[in-house]
Length: 90
Image (cartoon, rainbow, N blue to C red; front, top):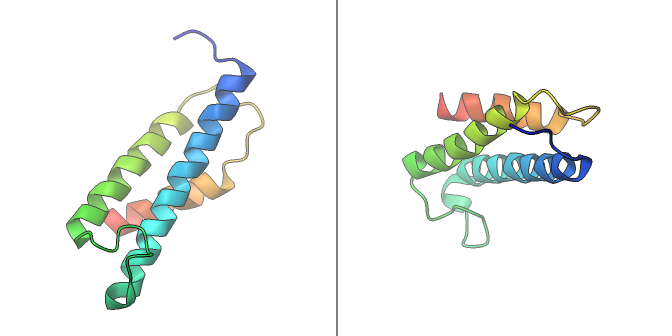
């Protein structure tokens, strides 16, 4: 793999933050249970479908996080989303 540019790293980090957001939203929707509405992302998904969606997102985050050229990017939000996703799909 060739070296990523600073712009590519910034785009990848933004994509990771978006993935973390997706994980957080799906888990939050699930936590609402029957109070979830069509305004809540994934409200129509079954529990297994939510787990599959979270698993896809966390897989991407883990792959990206394993790359070694991140520099000083902050992974606090991403690390928490990974931990929350691992618990959710457990």
